[in-house]
Amino acid sequence: MRGELFAVLTLAVTFVAATIVLNTPIDGGPGVYLSAVAIPRLAPSPSGTFYLLSLALAVGTVWLAYAVHRSRFGTGLFAIHDDEEVAEVMGVPTYRFKLAAFALSCALAGLAGGIHGVFVSYVTVAETFSGSTALYVILMAALGGTRHWLGPAVGAAAVTTLLYAFTTSDFAVAGRAAVGLIFILVILFLPQGILGGFARR
Amino acid sequence: MSESLLAVRNVSKAFKGVQALAGLEIEVRRGEILGLVGPNGSGKSTLINVVSGHYPADAGSILFEGRELRGVAPHRIARAGIARTYQIPRPFGQLTVLENVALPPMFGGSRSSGPRPNTRRSAGSNSPASPPRRGCVPMP
Image: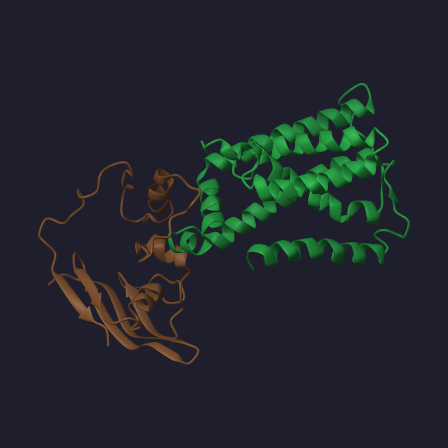
């Protein structure tokens, strides 16, 4: 399974998972309180702890992106992106590399979700499996640039800043509309992302 | 004389109803430079694609250094020492030129054949001492 079909299918899996969780005792209907989960005391206040945890994860993720980018694994992934058939014939184990990339991405998303879940302390199906979560992540990567190791981090900072700037004002809906508009503009006029102009390495 | 490096035995490949290769036999010996000659659609590219593992063969056997390649994943075939190019070049568009050149030995470089060649070195130093036999095989 490749390309657009794979992308659509991974998005669809979200809704399948949401339906399963909603109809089984995992969720129990209204949602799950996580306030009973003990928060490690890394800082004087809980919010400080969350900040430190998130910061560590962010730094770790960027470091990992840099390491992958510089590695043989990263070169193979970029080759797969350009031409998967040729990459395979040139000796890149495409299936194994794609599986590893998928697993790595899922692990990072899972870690981020773990911190986020305890942070909001109350998780519902609608919030957890909302399509916009997946969409924001793709937008962050596309906006920053998917071929530079720092690209997604730059995109994440930009999108998050933008969303919070609107959330704190009276135009939360306008913020979402702006994000959608930016997504379209980026795809049309900046397909390489903000860091796309910077040469690789 | 020199040993057989690649032996294609009774290989067939059909695309739906079109029989591209039917009972093909080819042998390539070590140091040999062999050309495939034939009109459009005679199966030259199909043979290359079958040997490199891009297309699975329907029947027959492909032996490289005595090892069966049929049914082996293309990246393992490349690692075994089979390298191929494309008639219409298919470079990795977003990789640098150096990366394009360095990628095949980085992934396909055979592990068993000693140290990997330095990709920055110019070609030509690996040519065999005696001039290889050159030949042509007409495609049916």
